[in-house]
Amino acid sequence: MPAVLSVEKLYKSFGSKSVITDLSFDVEKGSIFAFLGANGSGKTTTIRCLLNILKPTSGTTSVFGSQFSLDMAPKIGYLPEERGLYATTRVAETLVYFGELKGIERRKATTWAYEYLERVGLSDHAQTEIKKLSSGQQQKIQLGITLINQPELLILDEPTKGLDPVNRALFMNMFADFNAQGATIVFVSHQMDEVEQIADSLVMIKNGKRALYGPLQNVKQQFGTNTIHLSFSGEIPVNDALYEQTHTEKNETQLTPKPNITPKEILHFLTEQQLTISDYSLGAPSLQDIFVRVMDDPTY
Image 1 (cartoon, helix red, strand yellow):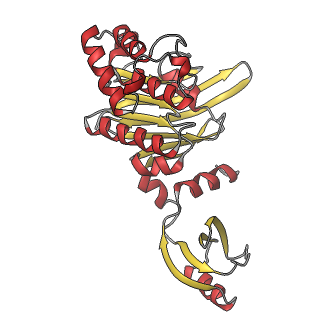
Image 2 (cartoon, one colour):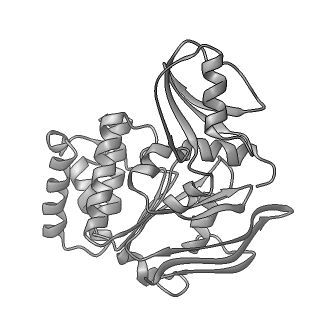
Image 3 (tube, helix red, strand yellow):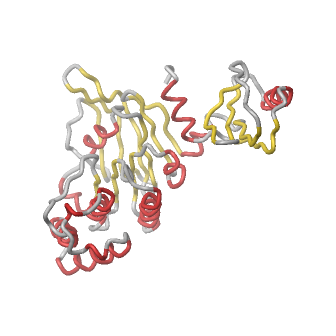
């Protein structure tokens, strides 16, 4: 599949401070691509370079096969990290106004706006001023502005930040629907469960450099398939020589074997410690665990 977005040997510095270093990745047409990294790792800077908001120090970026230009705007929906709306404008008129700015005929923009408000549960607020909406409701309007031109490419910078679980699920379903219609989606997120739910591939950057890149399942397999998922009663003993314990919830946990340690050795040790194990399985670590390990590991 052809690349919709491409970053090749990207460097970006602000004065003497290097923000992006030798970053390369491609986003295939029709994919859902997650862009991951800790706060301040360079994700937003990379997006701004792709959209020609910032000029790279060196390296190249391309959108639809060439450097971004304004004539590509009708094919792109961009939800930036910093968001803002006209406080005293009414909800429906806000959507219609931005639709017209994107070249949509007013009647079509109005029809789309009301259909969208119905879908996101805001049809009763069509004539409400923006300033009277909650932050989550305003976020739905921001997303509507991003989607109204039915873009081929969505670039979303933390689209579910601050949303409750119900509205997070609503957004995830809408992204999946847009992707099913052929849209390519690139999204920044710190919610690893969201990434595992819908992404097919990812890039993870650390201190401006690429740490992990590729199809989601391939990335997970790099970290082995022998993570132990346990259901137990009692208390898991600490044993830094055998395993690392991560992602503990109530009576469930994950244990990642240390190098050259087998799951069988760990289970034998735990039973010797009189831990009652009600269920266990082997599998790849969660993306949350992988993220934490990469961020904590100085070799990445």
